[in-house]
Length: 411
Image (cartoon, rainbow, N blue to C red):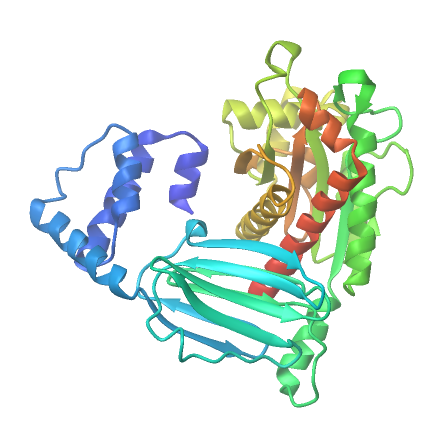
């Protein structure tokens, strides 16, 4: 968390300090720290404490892991567990979906070597067939084949990748605890907040494309998707209506929501419109970085114009600290799944990252709360996409998958 804050606040000294600590601890534990060393080099700060002996240990560990860095693969209830003998990241997994004449296929390519791939047999109740092969010397491929399209997500956890199937037809032989957990998850209450509305159009893009219109369309698609998945879902506005920001989280509190998601699109001045694009996800904090302040000023405008300086400073300090960590986790899952889903069909989707921001609409929420910027309506091509029905549905599905991922890991 401290390292993340340092990165988000562009504090290179703190970032370098935490990187050095990670490298030092990694060397003692014989863990590969190459990626941290590379990040440190980018900061143009050398670490005198990394001795030649330490570096040789790291290199030796890499050589060992390359021989067979996947130690085991097995199924457990609705999940496939892949254990590595090294730390894994998003770069270690790729995913594609294919439709054949006979079935749907979810294909996962895992970077690594699993010497027992040929002998390993994977089975899961509710999935017709699971295939595992060593596709090439650097890639293990896992294919889930089924008559209908499975809803799959993957979770990265230190030295483990977990592939979960969310829409299995549960069998009676599954444990009572698993069944109860599944239905408890689907009883979650979600409040979706389509940004702006009515007299507040939000940002305006080329050809008079309005933020309030784009985000409302995506919010409705998300509402329908989540309802199909079994969640209880509410919209803060069901039409082109203006609602004060403070009333949006009040609505979520009254509904006793488990999470609150405010949906927006971003914008920059015309002189930068062709250069700036991408998806960003924010969670509440008193961060004062220039980028966070710029975005927050745009989204806070309808209420902040009515507040004096002292009120604004009070707003920045009234934070529900116990919810910040949960909101951060939700933001990470949402951002990851938005990028993953949109990149399946569109190129050039920019990762704007997960960031902290002082957003008035999130203040007062008694549950994990985030604000998503689905793109820049000021950017010519991104603006067209944000008004495209197919792209809006992809965004909604990415948001829904992120919500599934968050609840599967945290409840």
